[in-house]
Image (tube, rainbow, N blue to C red; front, top):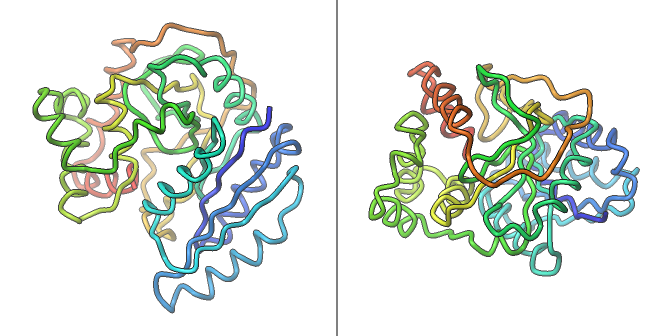
Length: 294
């Protein structure tokens, strides 16, 4: 199954190497097409680090094909991802999307490929997600949550066509339909506040708009029962990173047993998500919102 993998990189050489090396540990990597989007330096002080990353990505082997898109001007993460994903899905039916701070299980691609096939024609499924929060309950092999997520994900052209970049319109619809509380996991996730800050220009999150777009369409994301992704970017070294351990997880060391399941939320898992957000220390809320959805 030849699903293009889009990898978005900037200036973190060490993190990028870990992401690529963990991806190469997937058996399916050898037959995969990897498309790397390298954003241009935002300031002169970033030039050296960006150039280091660019030298490295040109040396990558082990995939069936490696394509590199080097931006000539700095787009920022949001515009880079929106335009990159859109350009690929203009010609392809599906895509796997990674950023440069994700360490992957060797079974990540197997899970993505199988899930993309299983739910290809299910209009209510917006995306497939590889990361699972450290919840306080046991979870089934896979389950659905309404909306989308952003740490190692996949989608189809049919779903991405629902993406709306207009934050004002999204907020208006959420408020008009009295959906802000449920969008925020009963007031615990503060996603609506994140969307308002995006509208005000206080952040440039693509992910909050992707999640709101799917939520308003009553679309869902499939999660694995064990995380296949670990975020390694919360060490303070990234543009949008903070040193937060609440999201630490261990990647699965065996495949996820994927079977076709009904597309709806399990109330107990939804409640566990809400508790996860609620337990976060108040002093970290702003940092967490920024990192999770940028």
